[in-house]
Image (cartoon, rainbow, N blue to C red; front, side, top):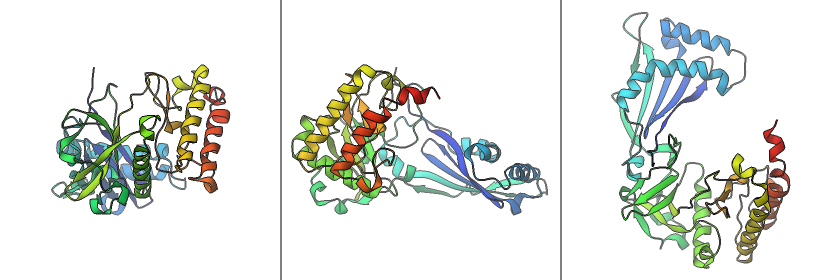
Length: 342
């Protein structure tokens, strides 16, 4: 049975001796909650917060160690967050909605009495791109990509997932177009703009050379636009295997009888790409997708190399692709079973 995507994430954040700030996501709404110790220190809540901060004093930051502090702030605000964003399902939300997602900057301060704490900022909501999406002016698209098909963001919706209870921590996901066609959406993200444009250009080249029709690589369908802005690209949807999506999936690591086949398939893909002057650029286990017929695909051409598999000095080079394949299939994957037993 198909299920909705849900987002209910948090709290994550950071803390110093003087302040604590958490971020919580509910649906496509984003909440940033700040607490300055000086503004709450004389309240019941403030004293609890100081106790938690004393426990972490002198220690380095740790997500696990700071969780009780983050949870304290979150729990105090939870009922308000739920009232401001009661719905966590993304069903029926278009990609346009993510460009105008509600964002709240809240703060805890001392209330009218010495013991009271109140939340301020709930009446001021900004509407900003969700999940650090970084739209670009469509006229700034690389020249080879200007003729790509445009899909209006208001006519592309987040699709349901077959995995019950699946959470979504980004809008990179399965979508469906106005014509009912399922595709895969990849947004242009803050601090990763160069990788987006690299992948867009490479997938365009793959399509122009006819390689997309015979290689197991994503096929570019077009870009998603809103007004004069491009927010991401659409690719064909690859249905992954039932026992795992990529090589970091334990079920696929256990299929040792298929590892040689996958290595040969990826080797053939890389060889063909190189023959046309194209470099994969980011070879690592999570970028080797296994489809429902148990064949290997090369995905993600953004070029952000993982130094465990491709040395930095060989990033986005022919030699780097071969190094990555060798390390994945001849070193990392054979050693996966031993690592899982640690």
